[in-house]
Amino acid sequence: MRVYQTINVLEAMNVRFKKIFDRHEHVIVSVSSGKDSTLLAYLAADYARRHGRKISLFFLDQEAEYIATIEQIRHMMSWPDTIPLWYQIPIRMTNATSYTDSFLSAWGEGEEWMRE
Image 1 (cartoon, rainbow, N blue to C red):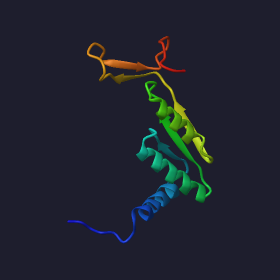
Image 2 (image 1 turned 90 degrees about the horizontal axis):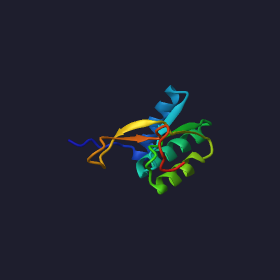
Image 3 (image 1 turned 90 degrees about the vertical axis):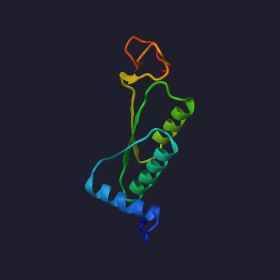
Image 4 (image 1 turned 120 degrees about the horizontal axis):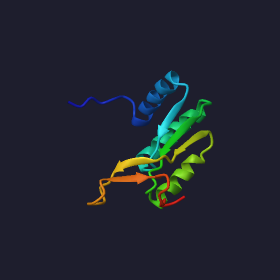
């Protein structure tokens, strides 16, 4: 059964943001540079700015990222009133691109990196 609300999605989002910002001093938005996380980060940053606050943007760089992803992340991390949290850490991930190697080691110490 569908229950129709009297407020639209943007108004509902602002109600949720108010709860989040009222309850937490430091708000962090995890971003991937995709359309969903970019929109959420933009709306959260806008809400924070309108209320005299800042948000942190968190991105875990997995090394093998598309150039467009890195460009978008750079753009987002330059937004005013945001605190960039861009992490490049040695991490072992399941490798779905190889029949011989079960894991991919991103940012491995002593290994050749795909990009600086």
